[in-house]
Every structure is written in structure tokens, then in C-alpha cells.
Length: 201
Image (tube, rainbow, N blue to C red; front, side, top):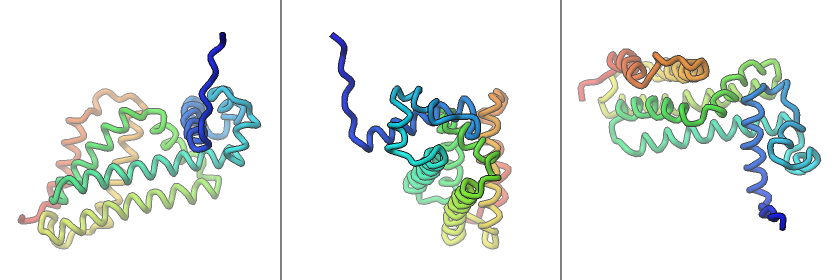
């Protein structure tokens, strides 16, 4: 007797469609991938996909939003685990590196999204996401200045731009499978970036 598939709730099905879409977009890209490819990956009809998402772009943007939300959530976890802002910044970088290794498909989708910047809606979403990343880092740096772990006079905005750039670089190295770029290399990068910022405390 054939095994009946378990009926999923609407939210469970949406989440599962997004997971399937990540795989499809990671294998291809936003422009080439089709909703029918996502349906095939998920094992449902194309019409069923449209009951949950109005367009392919809506799926893509929701994936980007999910990645953005998860990055900020685990950064907050790192910040909550220590009172020292400098240590938090190091842990945020290391944690990002480790998670990038475990979520390679999402990483590829996030990185390739910049090639879709000719689409105004996608470009706007990416700008907002990166502003959020920088604002979060700025907040940690400013807290460090207040507590004395970060040197007074440090430009929190400049550090945030450098941190954001390092994240993009990590993504690129991971996608290129650059074996020489390991956690030790990342730690040395962090030393060069953060050591000049250390305050007296």
C-alpha cells in the first residue's frame, strides 16, 4: 500500500517551498530558475506554489529576508553572551564564518543576489539589509567606546563598513572553495582589523 504524505500546515508548506527554492536558486540563479523548477524540487504542482507566493521574485526576496533575519539573530546571540564589545565583534565574525560553512546554498543565493541589482526591488532590499548589518555593528562599536574596550574617537560607521565588506569577502572565499581561507586566517584578519581599535580597558 502506498504511504500517504503527511499533510503540512500552510506555514510548514511555505517554509518547505522556501527550502526547495534555495536549492534551485543556488544551482542556477534568479533569472534562469523557474517556478516550475521549484515545484519539481518540492514535489508539488506549479499552481500549488502560486497559492503561497504570488511571483518568483516574492520567493527570492523572502529567502533574502530570512537570511538577513537569521544573521542579525545569531549576532545578537553573540552579543548577549559577553559584556565585552571587542570580544562580541570577534565572535560575530567567527560565528558568521562557521555558519557560512554550514549553509552553503543560502550563502550562494545571498552572494549572487547582487547580480540582480538591476531589479529595483531586489536592490532596495539588499540596501536595507546591509544598512541593518552596519547599524548593528555600529551599535556594538559604540557600546565598546562607552565601556572603554574600543578606543575613544573610533568611527563606528567606518568599522561597520569594514565589517560588512569582510562578510562579503567571506562569502566569496567560501563560494570559490578557497582552502587557504580557514578560521585561522580569519582570526588573523580580525587581529589586523580590531587590534588598532582596542581601548584602555
